[in-house]
Image (cartoon, rainbow, N blue to C red; front, side, top):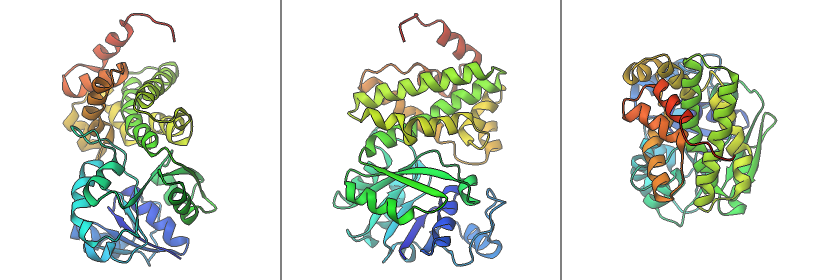
Length: 329
């Protein structure tokens, strides 16, 4: 039995915590919101996971020190924009023997750091950080539907330790050492999911969705390769697996946000209706910066950027994509 401190009581952190405690591990889940802590403690139901009854042994708390001290593993499950501030809050409670795990997917603007790199930047490189990534809808994990995921860490032994600690009969866990590739794929696929959602929101069909997923993956591969990532990472669970589920499923908040944008709704309306963090929007600025830094063309990413930040309509963004010079695939 291992002990886990989970930072963030969103759907993924909560679903993962419930699965871990059902495996026999100890789980403490932190939220900065006292109201949320009280509601989860009393009802044992997450508002966005209504079909999952949470194990009564999960400890919900707003006490960061109690969540972190003496735990074997610390899981960062906050939205990507809060990873740095959360790491700052807990760094004095940590000990190098603890393994830090991030399940957030994003890239920090200006620094262009991935989530694991942000954590190391704050707490120091002596800490081992693992990224858990793959096609993992929290809603399915919460009710025990079969799911596959990847434990990524530059230190192979650490990746394998986390893999073996969380692998079970409904969650099959693989390991790899290309954590940079896994995190780049995980962040950029959310942008492609926005594009796919817009396409369907405008009434386009399966042909367009398949094209966006395929050409979107090509953009991710080009950028990842330029950044020194391993090509095979992008054709595994953290690459093609994650982009397929996020860009095609109605359980995907990025796809749903894109769908609403494609129907002509304004961004503030969309965010209010989705009701949860849309990580693809958060990743856009960093993706644009990386495109320029590595001189890699990302037409779909740029089109989504124009819709979000330059007030270009989704239909005009499609026209601009189709009017690009024809090239060999």
